[in-house]
Structures are given as structure tokens and as C-alpha cells.
Image 1 (tube, rainbow, N blue to C red):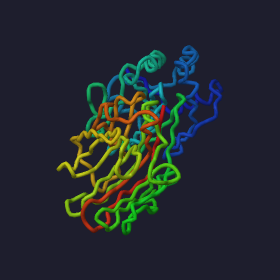
Image 2: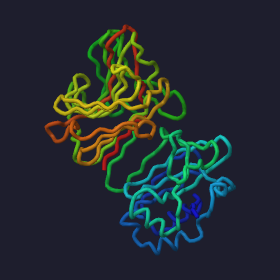
Image 3: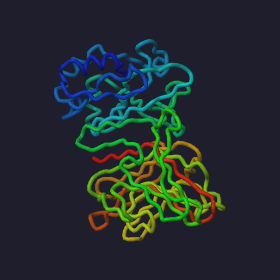
Length: 375
């Protein structure tokens, strides 16, 4: 059996006065998804008084024994706009799209995420089957790999992350805390870009310009050619951008695009970044680590989708022993810690850059949301 708490019941719980914290609005696309969220107390300290929470949750959930039963839920019990909890660090809220039926305003509790926190939650509400899984096509699947709802998929580029464990999280329009730069080539640099649709706010476009070696970039901080506002290897960090590369690097107009941590936009000495480049003969994503100017490059099997909104994220673990590259929420490459810069002597910074190596046509990267998480 899997027990699923509906949004109305959960709203009763979090507004009951038992957890009187400042509300955080769950900024969803519909009014039904804007009820206040006060989960900090709920998920702190292993849920505190589990007996109290069990009492509060009593009778506030629907129970299903099969995927078919889950699909058959109707009315207030229908499933969509899921909140997936990762209690030891916070939770993700994903927007789900379903082409075969309406699924709305639900909380599905995964039983397989992380350790004792999830086990404690399971003991409270009796969840026995985790639904917090995606297959390689981005479809929501159960523990056996069965698709939960025909045509139901997550779009990992449409999420909000809420962290209640002492970490720091931000989600900003690219360019609002980043400064633009170029190498002075004709037409190179950064310009603002309007919102292209209702999904993402406007951001910036990085232009390579028409000069063969033109470069455009953004970096966090007040500008300058070098960046040293991040020290890796001290805590877990993740940085990501919603980006779009409109035109491929094609051998005539050849360029590279980099996203992540770099101490400079050109000639990087210390950094960890995801890269699109055809220099190795493929159009696949690459993950590059560089410490002291010595690099290690891992080429993935995932091709860069040109002309598509992509969430490109780079993560490093707390001790700097592993770096990861994610595209649309899916890990595509990893690298060991040998070439990951660590310590103040190898400080780096948040940078996105495009650099041409051939051709006379301007090439661009469009940047929308920027996300920075550390914990």
C-alpha cells in the first residue's frame, strides 16, 4: 500500500497551529497550489514528536494498492503537481505534465530517498512504495519501473527547491547578480533578453561576436578578469542555469560553451564545469575538472540538445572528491577529485562563457534562471 496525502489535508496540518512558523508560499501555477508550507518544524530533528504528527495525519490520506488505483483517483484525490520530499535537506516541487488526464495538487511521499528520515516518515503514514523515480525518458515510474499514469512526465527544468537544513538556496534571473564581460571582439559581450514564454523570466544572451576568437561571459561578482568567490571542498555545492543554445557548433562557426565554476572565462586554471564543445569530435556534454591548470575531461554519451531549454547543473560533494554534471535533472557525467580545485589557493567563481574558435557569424547562449545551492 502507498498512502498519499492530499493537499487539502496537508494544508489543515500545516495551518493547525502546531507548527507556527512564517509561511513560505509554494509558488505553484494554480491557486490550489499556493497554500502555505510550514515544513521546517515538521522535518527538523527527525520530525520531533512523531506521535503528535501521526495524530495530525490520521485520516488525512488516500490509500492505493496499485498503479491502476492511483490512476483511477478522482476529484480531490487526483494526483499531479507533486511535492517530493527529501527530508534531510529539504524538498523539491516538480511540475508534472500529463497528456491523458488531469492530476492535481498532491503530495506523494517517497519511501526510498534517504535513510532514517524517510523511514521515520514511513512509520508515520505507512508508505511502503516509493514513487519518487524517473526513468530515462523522464516518465514517473514506481519501484518496478512501471509508468505512473500513461503519458505522465516531469519537466526537471521547472522546479523549486526549498532547503530547511541550514543550507543556502537562491533562484534568480541570470544577470541580476552576474556581471557581463567579453574579450573585446566585435559584437562580443552580454545583452538582456526578454521573456520568450511564460515559463521563464527574461535573462541574458551571451554573444561570441563575429570575430573568430570572440567571447562573451557572465560571472558572479563586481567584474574583473579573475574570479575567486567560491572555495570548493568545504561543503556540498550545486550551481545550475536554465540555458538554451540556439545554434550548433558546426565546424564552420565553431565554439565552446561552459557552465560552472571557473577562475577566469579564458585560460582556466582552477575550475569544475560542464561543457559543450565539438573539439573531441562529438556533440556530447563533457565534464571538466582543472586544478593548477591540469585538466581531466569526461565525455558523456548524452548529446547536447540544440534549440531546447536545458537545466545544466554542476555539483561537487563536500570534500571535493567527486564532481557531477546533470542535464535536465539526469546525471550524465562524473569525475573524481584529483583535478577538482580545493582550498583558498585554488578559489574559483561562478561563470558561464561562450568562446569561438572559427567562423565569422555570431553565436549565442541564452540564459534564464540561475540556481545556486550549498549545504
